[in-house]
Length: 533
Image (cartoon, rainbow, N blue to C red; front, top):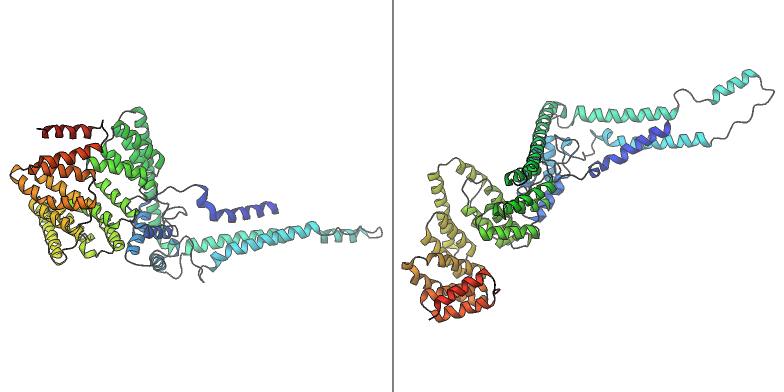
C-alpha cells in the first residue's frame, strides 16, 4: 500500500511539468498576427509561452486559439512595438489579470504554501521510503525464552505490532492534505495582493467565457465535419475543398488545410487566388517564414496579378526575412496605395512598415500616415470624404519630398498614390523623379520604363514618351546592358522613335537568350519580322 501511494505521488509531480509535451500543441498564431521583425516575433513567442490562457485548461496563450488568448497575444506585441522590455510586459499583465495569468506564479509570501507543496511532498515521500526500509531491515526480535510467561509474551506482541494508523500512512495522508489545501488556497482565494481582481470574483466571468469558447469550438468542429463530408461527396467541387481548408484552419489542422488547398488548386487549374491562399497557409505552418514553395506561389500570383493583396503582403514578408528592408517597404507601400482606405489589413501592414523602416534606418515620417485612429476615422467616411483624405495625405507627401528630393522610395509612393487617384500625368512625373534619384536601381529603372511604355500607347504622346525614356534606358544600360528586360524596352522605344536598326539589334540580342521553342521567342520573332524591309 505504501509503495502504491508513493508511486502515485512521484508520478504526479514528475509528469506535471511535461504535460504540454505529451501532445504536440497546435500552432494557434496566424501569419497576420506575427511581427515582421524575426527578433521581435521571437520575443513575443517567448512571452506568450509564459502566459496562461485564462479560459483554457493549463494552456499558454501561444498554444490557444481562444479569442481571449488572441487578444493577449496582440497586447503583448503592441507593448513590444511600444518599446517595453519583457519584464515590464509581464508585470503589466500580472497587475491587470493577477498572478494566475503567469504559468509560473512568482514566489511571494502569499504563494509560499503553493510553491512549497511539491517540496514538502517530496520530503514526505523520502520519509516514506526511509521508514519502509527501516522496517524491512530491522533485526528480528530474539526468540521468546521458555520461562517467559504467557502474559509477558502477549505484552511483547502488542508492543511489536504497528498501530492501526502507522507513521508512514499518517505522513502520506498529511501530504495529500497539504496539496489539497494549497490548491484550495490558490483557486479559491486568488491573489491576496490584488484585492481588486481576486480569482474568486472572476469565477462567473471565466465560466461564461469558457462556455462561449467551448460553444465556439464545438461549432468549428461541426463545420469541419460537415465540410469534410461535403468534400467526400463532391470531390470535384472546388468550393467544397476551399470550405474544408477554411474549417481545418479554424481548428489548427494544418496538414488537412494544406491538402485541401492543393486539391482545390489542382481543380482550379492554378487559380491565383488559391495560390495565394496556399502560400499564406504554408507561411503560417512554417511559423511565419516564407518558405521556397510559398515564394514560388507568390511570384506566380504577382506575375498574373501584381495587385493581389495577400501575395503582395507575403512578398514583402519574404523580403523582410532576407534583410531587404527597403524592398519590403516598397512592396508594402504599394499595397497601401492600391488598397481601399478601410481595408482590414492596412493596420497590420502599417505596423510591419514601421518595423522595416526602423531596420532600414528610414524616418517613420516618410511612411504613409496610417495610424489606427486614421483608419478608424476612414471607416466612417463617405467615398467622397475618403478621396479628400487621400488627396490630403498625397499633398503632405509631396510637400515632404520638396524638402527631401533624394528620397527615391518617397517618389515611388507618390507616383503610385497618383495612380490610385487616376492622375496619370502627375504619376508619370513622379516616376521620372524617382528614376533620376535611384540611378543605381535597375528594378526601379525597369519599372519606370514599364510606365512609359503604357503611356506611349497614346499615339499623340509617343514621340514625347520616346524622348523621356532615353534617360532611364541609359541608366539601365549602365547597370546591366545585357538584362533581358532592358533589351526589350530598348528595342521597343527605338522602334517608337523610328530607329529600326537599334530596335532590331536589341531584340535580336534578346532573342538569343530565350528558349527557341518558347512562346515569348515566337512573339518576339513576329515583331522582328514586322521590322524587316
